[in-house]
Length: 166
Image 1: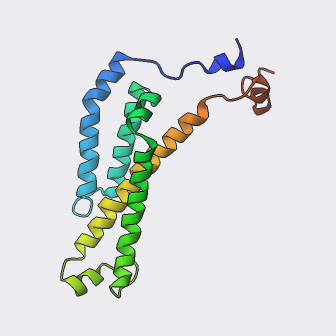
Image 2: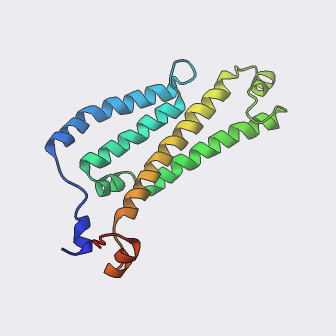
Image 3: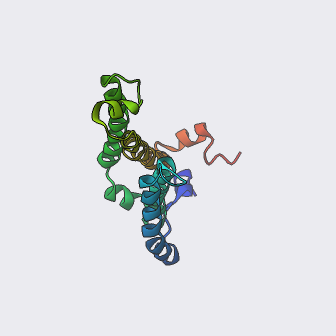
């Protein structure tokens, strides 16, 4: 058996896992979104909610295959999530500075517009943190999965110590 064959196909179809994920995924996604949107009011938060949303995507990839999940969630969508999160986070901070406060000093919204500092915090947590966290988790997973595929000839594998039975 060659070194390239030892990797084999990393996806094994299992009706039990696929059925379980079909049942569980909507609930985990809903719970992740619940934590995200209620992060400032209840235990949990945007980081935890974004993590659960990102891990739900990983769960789908484990059940239905990485490539089918990668086709469903395009890289441009993930980049858009992370970029949007950074823009919202930084934009809220710059807006508070433009209103005479410090970076992410939400009281600037109260002084200028008479609205609660709560809305600035919600923008950062829901719009910024959750999007960044879920996007980074999915990106790291896809990057790791892409790095698993062997590239090159057998000599490359022996140099890396892969498949070296000595």
